[in-house]
Length: 275
Length: 274
Image (cartoon, rainbow over all chains, first blue to last red):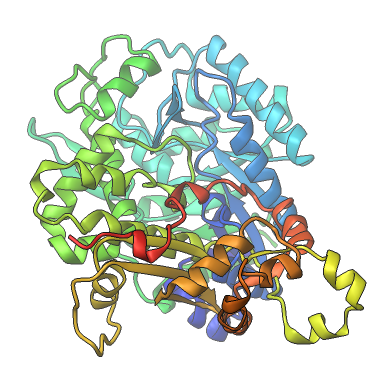
């Protein structure tokens, strides 16, 4: 299964020329209106493609209680649009009633793990389904982290029964920013729980002190490092739904569809070599 | 290229630093500050395109950033962020010379509300004529969820239209205007209305029976009320109240966009022109 993130500007091209795509991902919060043209458009899209619902606002890593009001919105969107996949992020975005619209880093320690497990359990209980949790892009090391992110995710999977969304671009971004190896991350990562893979491009910015910072802007083609991690993952896993994300300087539909075709071709050549 | 070890930060401290560029924060925290501010300013620009056109992009961004610092989102649905923006504009010194700006912003808000409003079939003449008279008398009516009204002492509707590529045949007359915002298929209509339609819709928003809706309270006004009713039917402004309630019961959040509803306008002769 290969898909792309939904962009309203691509809708007509997607419906006309998207035949070789299998699924479309849309941010859950963009469907939280009551109805109208946005819902009508997604109804048309889901009559042709499987839907993946990608939440960006539940703040699962937040220190406060899970926002039950927002959980209810998410549950109603899921009931209305019947997605094949539902995912959220290992991050926080709300504090004390203020929503920051960013995926902020959490500390990897036992107290945080206990809290995230409770939040994911509550999410899965309300939605009555398994949810995939995505690894974040990080820029700032969180003080107090006693565990590796990969161990934290493995524990989260073991205790909550959730699945994982493996974002390989985030792996590249975070590992370079941490001064660590992306390949090592994938080696340590609980691949058995992966239900979806994200691929995207990122930016590289020079800081004042001369160091380079990788920034997850989803604004370019998938980078070589992410493709090589994808090959590394494919060598160990069967077919996994794979999505191309592009959110900044969105190109024409054809460019995105071509990236998805590249992923499919890579997958095919791997399958042939394995056979 | 190891990340320097930052001071221990709780989410509370980081949250306080996100909207405050001089608060203490870990190294590289500016990546998050930039994302937060630029994405929220962009959400306001998308939500208030008429205001961005009226004041220009650069000024809008600076003004929106100030709003973000004062009134950051209180929920994660950015489609419905900025309900307080019009009130903010009224008190924002640098635009004091553009007193109509807030009302134009309210129309942008009603446009957004109408775009995302629930789908409820409009009442049609056929369904009225096929219902037996007793049932018809009991049936309660309501406004279509996309319908929003706004009364302004300024020609807010005309000013809005001029920012949105609509032809303004009569030019800009500096009069008070009552504006009706509604969804028409996949288009949003933003139109001035007169007091007869306003008065009918004022009754309709309290879920009247058909008899109550058609009664203007004075015999001489019956033909005028009937004409306003015909216009409301033609424009799809009325729905069956029960059908509306059923539709609203399953939407993600029925109240989310109602924060964009200004007070219902009073009779136009109460308005005072500046």
